[in-house]
Image (cartoon, rainbow, N blue to C red):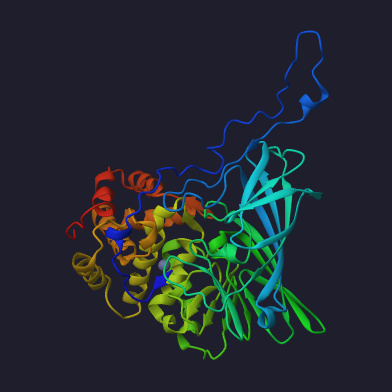
Amino acid sequence: MSSRAPIAVLAAALAFSGCTGSDAPGTTAPAATAGTSTTVGTTEPPPVTSTIPQGVHAGEGLGDTLFPKAGNEGYDVQSVDLELDFTEVFETGRFSGVVTLRIDPLVALDSFVIDAGDLSLSDVSVDDESAAFATDSSQVRIDPVPVLVPGTVSVVRVVYSGSVPTDRAFRPGTGGIVRDESLVFSIGEPEGSTTWMPGNDHPTDKAPYAIAVTVPTGMEAAAGGLLVSTLTEGPSTTFFFEHRLPVATYLVPFAVGELTRVDRSAEGYAWRDYLGPGVAEAAVLGRQDEMIRYFEQFLGPYPFEANGALVVDRDFWGALETQTLSTYETNAVRGFVVAHEIAHQWVGNSVSVADWSDIWLNEGFATYLQWMWVDHDGGVSLDEAVAEAHARMRSTGPGWGPGEPPAADMFNRMVYDGGALTLHALRAEIGDESFFEVLERWVTDFAFSSASTADLVALAEEVSGSGLGDLFDDWLFGDLPDLP
Ligand SMILES: [Zn+2]
C-alpha cells in the first residue's frame, strides 16, 4: 500500500492493546479426539457410533495481534474457485457468487468458521452434502456432517449474494467494495475482501484462485493472474482468470465496469493494464517492466505469472499492491509509487506478514526498494531519502516505533519510513554484501508464504554472524535512534 499523505496522529487516543497471540492456524484448537473409541462397560462391544470421528468446534480468529478475529483456525485453504455474477450490479446494486474452498483440516472438525462480512449466504455444502450454517456478525459457522478429518481435503461450497454501496469512504486501514454508475472496484487491505467473497481472511492462509466473473457484454472484468479465456453469451460475458500461485485474500484484485484493457508484452509474465472510466494512459505505466528488471538484480526472478496496473479515477488512499495487478487512483500513478507497488510483489505478496503487527516488513522493504529505484532513476538519492525520512519522523512521528503499530493507525508513515530506516541501519551495521544477501534470502527462503520480524532477525544474524537483536529492538520499538 502507498498512501498519499501522512496520516493523522491518532496513537494516543486510539492506542490498541492487542492480545499477544500470533499462533499458526490450528495450533490453538483443542486436541482432537478423532478415531478414539470409547468402551462402555467391560463386556459390551463398543457401540458402532464410537468409530465415527469426534471433532472440535474450531474457534473464531487466529489471534492476530492487531485483528484477533481475522482468519480462522482449524483448516488451511488449498485452492479457491470463485464464480461471480455482476450483470445486475449497475441496475440493482446487487451481485451473486459461488465460492468453492478446498480445505485441509488441521484437526478433526465438528464445525469451523469462515469470514463472510455482511454477505448473505443461501446455501452451504461440504463434500456435496448440505451443511447447516449460522451467521454471527461477520463470521459463519458451518457444521459439516460427517466430521472433517486431517489428511482428507474437503470441498466447501458457499452460495451467496451481496450489495455494493455507492457511499463507502475509504481511508487507510479500511477496505471494501464500492460502485458508481460505471465502475465497481474493491480494496482488500486489511479486511475488505469479505465484502465480495467469503474466505479465510488472513495473510497466513494463501491459495491459488480460479475466478470467473460475468458482466454485461461490452463491459470488462479486471482480476489478477492470467486471463485464460472469455465467453460471450448474448447479453453477458464471462472472463476467466487464474492466480496459479498462492494469493492472500486481501491481495485479490477486482473491478468490473467500463474498463479499457491494455495488453502489453513482457518476457516471462503476462502484462495487462486496465484503465477505468475517464483514465488516460500514463507514460509511467510503460516503465513497469523496467522496474521489474531493476528489482530482479536484488531480489531474483519476478515471482508471479502476471503484472499490471488497474487505474481508477476514484479516491481511495493512493495505491494497493493487489497481487499481479496493483490498484491505483489516478493521483498515485507516479514513478515512485509504481516502483513501490511492484517491489511489494516480492515483499508483501510473495512473502506476506505472519501477523498484521509485522506490517513494517511489507512497507519498510517496499519503501527502501522504492528509494533505491528513485536514486537509480536519477531522482532523490538514497542517502537524501534516508535523511529526509529520519528528519520527518523526528518531527512528526507518532511516538511509537514501526514494529508496534496500533490497529487504527497501522499505515502511519512511521511504518513506512521507520521500517525503511530500520533496514538502512541494518545495512550500515552488517555491510552491503551481507545486507543484499539478506534481501535475496528473505524473498527466496519465504517465497509464497508468510514470515515474521523474528524470522528476519534470525536470517540477518545467520547471514552476518552478528547478534542483531538490540539493533532491531532499538529501531522497531520506542524512540527513533540517531542515524548510523
Ligand atoms: Zn506499500
